[in-house]
Image (tube, rainbow, N blue to C red; front, side, top):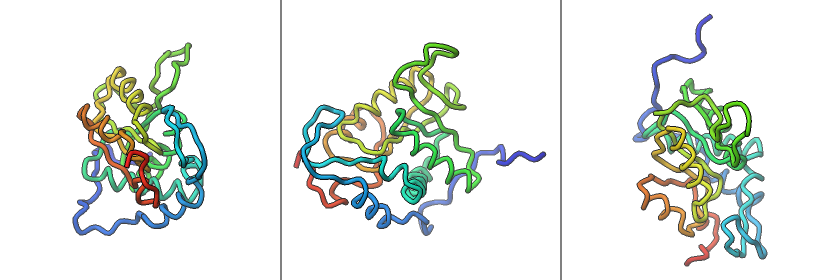
Length: 204
């Protein structure tokens, strides 16, 4: 029986002159409607904030997941990695979304998840998925504040032997995450910043 995908790696067309299926405005509307909340919050980084972005309200929504998968794949098309992954559980739906869209386009992209704690049995490793040492990788995350979660994911991915080149997030809160990645030599991209959602960054 023929394999579902060609063995030879494929690339998406060049971004120049290509109309994308990613509906940016539709995803902004979903984020504003479902994810953005105002009040007094303490973030995972320990910072206090007057607003909170509950990314899972959109990443675990059928329409949101599809839009996010399309958006991240569009960012990846200029330098497609072997694999995408990130810290569980926040990155889990992102990885699934990107792989689903990639599969529909017959792109042989792999996924991996980074466990917060090793299993304690079996392979007893932090990395789950069909990846191998030497594979190029992009880390994905729903919301980046200071970048701490993705930096830990990078550390564990590189300990496994992956070549992490880039970090992509759905929303950048613009509170130091970009600088944390770039000063360590990782390319950083986001689909949106909080300013795109009409919010003034806390550091502004």
